[in-house]
Length: 248
Image (cartoon, rainbow, N blue to C red; front, side):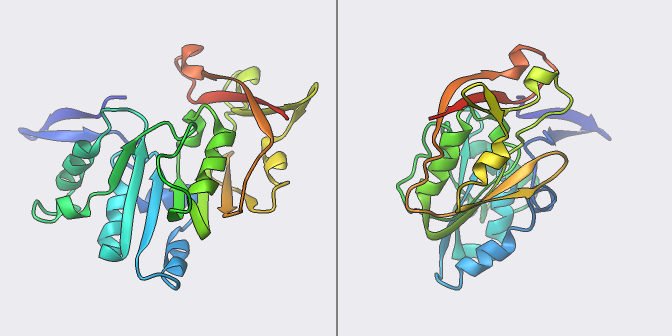
């Protein structure tokens, strides 16, 4: 994905940021609900908390959270592509005037470049709150991703994850991005996730669902990844990675 475009408007060169990576608290609330109550409940137990966004893009939401809560919140982000790095987040924060040149460095999130479907690169019991929007659809191993989210949450931690598990505009065999099979029977991914006591499934934006995950000692979704593939390689108009599982 192009990081940004340069256009000349009224004789001045201006950066045009990708709308797909330029999501802040306003967009987040529309997609997964208001996350501020989760954060503020965490402050009841701790003076300073750690918050992680998986798929943070330009880091807009993390910068806005830092602007709102200051040093009370330590922000962390994960992006997948190497060139979506901390220098880009800094450039975005300055361009959008979220922080001044004097403020920006001390308010940037801690950023990791990683495949969160393989491993979230932090120790267990590390984050008080985790959230993700418009990202799970691209993760190859969605089941292991949720297990990793559980691993890095603190004892009383919570995560809110947008699944984006279904694409009605795709051809029938490519609609379901989180496909689960038990022998020769197709199982609904949301019905399967509801079997786990620490997972709550809620209707989200458009046709998708959100997972509200409360920390459990060990989360094993009992799913074996059979295959995953980037749907854009099949059709340029498709988005997301289809993940196919069988129940162990």
